Length: 334
Ligand code: MN
Image (cartoon, rainbow, N blue to C red; front, side, top):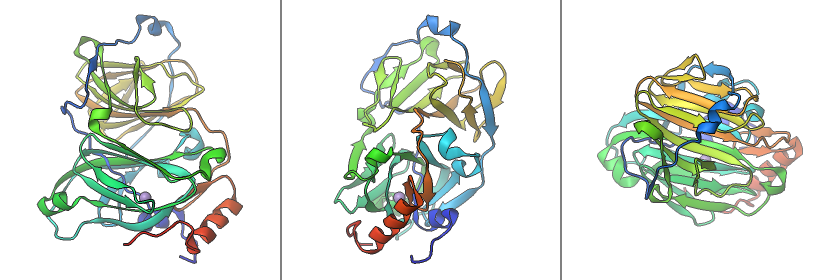
């Protein structure tokens, strides 16, 4: 670990794992709020699409997570997607039964949060603060690395033994400089904690994980304004996102075919990035669709990202490596 690794290598060798598993049909909400988007929103200026990115090739994180690294293919992603630094999407993939738990061994993070979402399959996590848990279908783990943490991420033991389909994602959410060196934190968010917005006319439903939509608030506590929505649309279902252009906004199409705005088509695996203009993003499903909506207020600070660390300056990165090597991130058995 003395030699700086390239970002890609370090991520492949040590970093995150995208965990998500989106599962349709699970009754995840405690309440089905019949909120509808106000009809007055339709007069707001629509947010135009900047670009639609095709799915990047998949790579392995450790031996446990077969992910597509979306941020690697988006120019200036750390600013355009701010506060998001990384989206590793693990499309549904069937693992053979295994005696050994596949995954990623002990590695550090500093300066941001790792957010793991599971739709199918089950992931076990342990970190150097003593926190740990199982992330199962519908669950979200919101881990604040902040000043520094060591963790490891593996297929959960029973899932490993049985084998099965894993479907998940991992996001890295940046922290503002004022929060980067705070104490680490850990929010285990279970499926039951996540409320669901029911769309009008049988259009589908949206699990609000962070931020707010149609009066439904997400359970995640965040340092800055962040939206993470897990949306399932029926064919013909319409989703309106009243997120104005001063905030970044993007949508990953996990399955289905959609039209964004008046005429931009996007299909399974596509990543839609909106321009920073307008006030209302509109989406319509042409077939049953499963979407991950990512938005938020740009942090507006320099991002220096190196492997598992994201800070504001090169000096802070050098300090992170020095602190990591000298044991300041604590201890975690591999
Ligand atoms: Mn990690």
